[in-house]
Length: 457
Image (cartoon, rainbow, N blue to C red):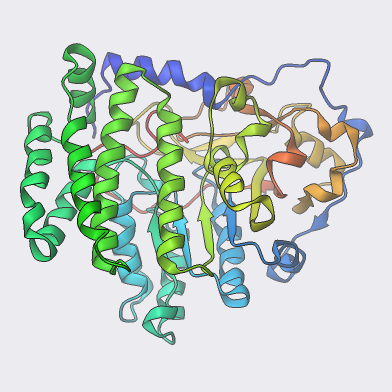
C-alpha cells in the first residue's frame, strides 16, 4: 500500500476540495421539483440511443461524463454510445482521463493482433496507481476487447485508437521517452539525461518533490522546459510528424506539465486544476491534429472535467475545464457534451486517500438537486436534451448536480453537489435512476503518483 500522504499534500487536498465540489444549500434560486415537467426520452436498451446519436449529428468531439469513477452503468452506457459513434459516425479514437504511457500500451493492444478478454484483463492490470479501479475494471476490459476485435478488419490508418490525456506520472513518461530518443534522435539524449538527473533525488515520489519545492524552491522546471524545447525544435524540422515523433513529444509534454502540476500544488503559483485540464485539452488537440483535419474524438472523463465550467461555480474560483476549453477552441456546434448522473445505488470508492476499495451505498439524491428533480419527474432511465429545457426559466438557475469522487463518505452528502445551470453545462444528460458498483480487477499497487490527485476527480 502507498505511504501515508504528507501533511503538505493533505493540506492541499483540503484546500482544493471546495473548488471542485461545493455545498448545494437552499437559496432563492432553488428549483421546486414539484412544478417541473422535464421532457425526456426513455432509455432501456441500445436502440433507445437513436435519438442521442441523431442529436450528436456532425460533432467532431463528443465528451461523455460520469458522476463517479466507480459506477458500472456509467461505463457500460458510455461503451454502448462509443461503439455506435465508431461504427456509425466514423470516430477515430477515444481519449480517457488516464495516463498517457499506460493508455498508449492499450492503444497498441487494440490495434495489434486479435486477443481474447483474458488478455485484455491482464493488460489493464498495468493501471496500478491508486485508484486502480478507474481503468482497471472488467467493464473497460470488455470495451478494450471489442476495440481489438473491431480493428482486425481495418487497415492501419482506419484502426480506432485509445489514448490517455492526463498529466500524472512524469517519471514513467521520462522512462518511456528514452528508447525513442536513443533510436530516433541520439543528439537529444543529454537533455533527457538532465531531467532524469534532476528528478533522481526524489525517487519518483511526488510528495518528496513537492516538499522540496515548497521548502527550498528547488525544482526541475528549467530541465523539463529545455527538454520540451529541444524535442519540438527537432520534430519541427519535419513537415509531418511520424508516430514515433508524436509519441516522443507527448512523453516530453507529460514531463513538462507534470513537473508544473506538482510544483504549482506546492507553491500556489496558480491552480493545479487548471494546469491539469489545460494539459488534457492540449493533448486532445494534438491527437486531433495528428489524426487529420477530419478526425473525430470521443472523450471519457468525470462530469467535473467535461461539463462546461462556465456554468458552475467553478467559474467563480477562476477554474476552467476540458469541456469549456474545447467549446471555446472548436466552437459549440462541433462539440457535444453528455453528463451522467444517478438518483441512488452503489459505487466503488474509498473512505480516505489511498485506502482500500469499498463498495458503498449511494443514498437517494438530496432534495432540490437535479437528480432528485429527474427522479420525481418519472422513475427510470432517461435522456434529457438541453435544447428541450432552454426555454424553461426554472433551468436558467443553478441547481445541485451530484459529483462523487474516488474518496467518498455517503453519510456526508452535503459537499457532493456542484451548483450547475444544467441547460448550459451539458448538451444532454443521461440519468440512470438506480446504479450499481463497478467491477474492479484485482491489481497490486505500485508506489507512483496517484491518478486524480488531489481533487479526487
